[in-house]
Length: 492
Image 1 (cartoon, rainbow, N blue to C red):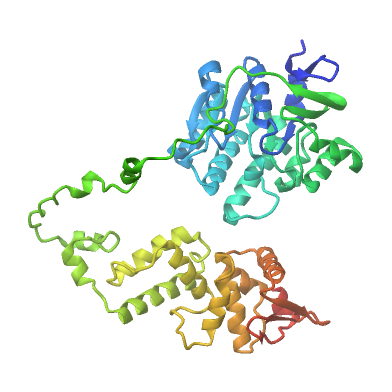
Image 2 (cartoon, rainbow, N blue to C red; image 1 turned 90 degrees about the vertical axis):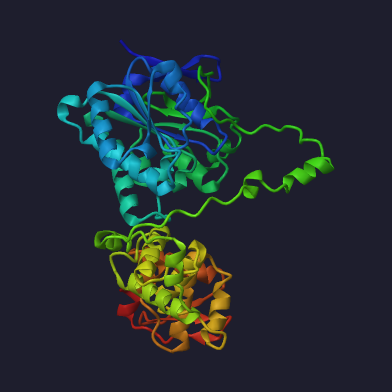
């Protein structure tokens, strides 16, 4: 018996079915810009197939948790579980064949990628006796299988991309049928998109996305313009589970709704009167409450407590007095801690927010309770330190002009610009790609080269490569130029 899911209607008014058994064997790719009806399409497919096959939904925005009310999906909050707990849950889900929504809305992008990679990899590695058929739906797939490196660490990107590749390339033999949806085909890794045999292409406006959609559907480039004209909820379907020829379809209605919806226009409130205006700046009542009584004297701490206070120092008045430092002492401690972080090869590539916590611990271990730097200030000082400038730049320092020019650049590019400025000022050979990558906070020399290209596009630098492959970089605003590096150091 063939099981078909009614996806909507074709132009002639006939039903547009999705062959579920064929889908389990061939996988599906859905593409459409924001507002094209992509999530609505996925919901139609999930509701129509809920009673026939197990469903596992990777939901970065929490849009599909409402399926639990109508169809009994178990909602798993990815941010509330450790990686070990997610592995145990994934194994039990494959064994017990329960439908599940893994919601990741409470996590940052890197956390979402790590949680999804852990969950999907465990589904893929489940024991053979649990290889039951399951529909694995991944919304916003470009987050989990990016075409190029982003702001996340190389380790997390590799784990997430590997899990998505296994799902789409090798998941069929394990009963896992991948259904991935993306806003941008150009941002989705090609080896992941290429494994799908069924396609539903919705409205898109960028030429690069239209061209890739046309290629996947076997259309001529001039036919790609039709993707701009598609209305919300209209898609072009192609594939063994859908249609042997490109078929326009309109997606039908759904039974459940997402918690979030498109914003609607509504009238603004009336202009507030003088009393309402005054309430905006009214002092909160809790600020006028009397201060609590001082705590009673504490007993003398033990040696064990003193040792623990290195990691979590007390913030009492006595400690603040003891740790008070002069500006010169404070700056010396900050510079020393930054130098230690940069010198630690294993730590210096971690995210700035993590290094900021490490920096605070190092300062406290030197008796400095408050470094005076917030996260934004620390990012700037970390960029300087990676360029070899550990102490604050004085007004009379020639590098002060370079620091002013760097302020106009994105925060993560300033350290590289200052590294180049320092090399140019000292007339030493242009730094290698490896050194630039280290200052940029990555192991990838490819990212370093892309950053240099970006800086040249912005007019901040001019790159010159001679016939021998040597590289020199000029900084037009400063009138400085590095010495020419040899070919080996430029490519290393």
